[in-house]
Length: 81
Image (tube, rainbow, N blue to C red; front, side, top):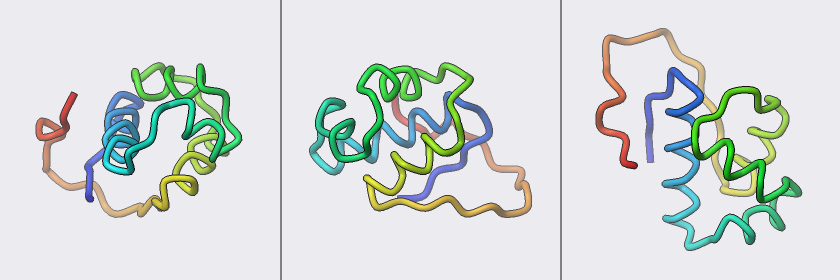
């Protein structure tokens, strides 16, 4: 699963998709990651302001990692709602 993310909304969509692929509810992901379910909901809905540490905790619970690469000309249009 690869996603291009340039905004908080893009990150949120990618994390929601990964959660659903893993068959987890927000509540289950909250328990697994140690992050409040409300915080997961806010992140998945693209609200800005999440701590980077929180995003890493969620990624770890979903067995994901972030890869920083040079900016491309790709678009994020392919991200699912």
